[in-house]
Image (cartoon, rainbow, N blue to C red; front, side, top):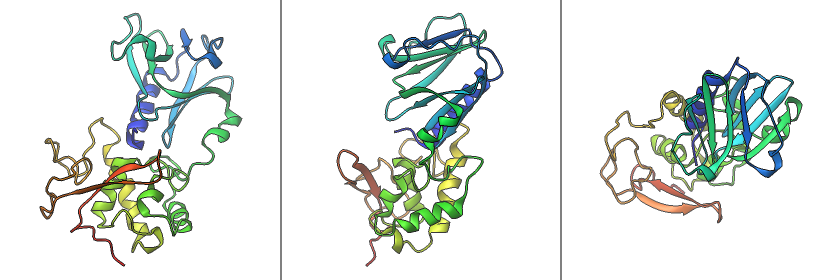
Length: 264
């Protein structure tokens, strides 16, 4: 699933291409929006809220989308052919002005709602790690309320704080030397852990490459994520992997048993 920094960058690029210009192309390819036509309306702004994208147009309407596991928005120049990123049958929406076209492939939860109804879609989310209203104290408070939950699961619960996906869950816990199955209430310093999460996402939000180590070489960009069986970059102990969570929401979790021991 795309992480919060990827969603933020997607929304930022959509905003740069579409905001302040009227739409001349509007094509929704989902049954519920088959008759929707936004041509003539101007895009006011495009923002990310956790892993949701909100494209606000005038007349107080908002186009909502979610990338989930496989969704994406691609930009191409207006007047050119559709980008050949994926087969055309995977297109769910096309929105464009006289300069740019945004094509949504396999984007999910496509809805057009009034601005007042946005809360029904994103109001349940906790503080957004990359949002202008980021509130670390409230994020910590939310995590403390989930004291019995394993910290690896609590970080993925977007109601606690919004934007962390499986990659950053694993990487933040490694940096802070916390075992993923540690009860959230037993984590020594939640304030520091939350601060590390925000710092890592912010460091990667302006470019598509994601590195938590500062390196970009293959198998060195991440400390533990997707490195099961490989030596820890810190201590050379083999990285372990196990599913965490309840199916179908279980996620592959990676950690170093030496750097992140499970303490009683």
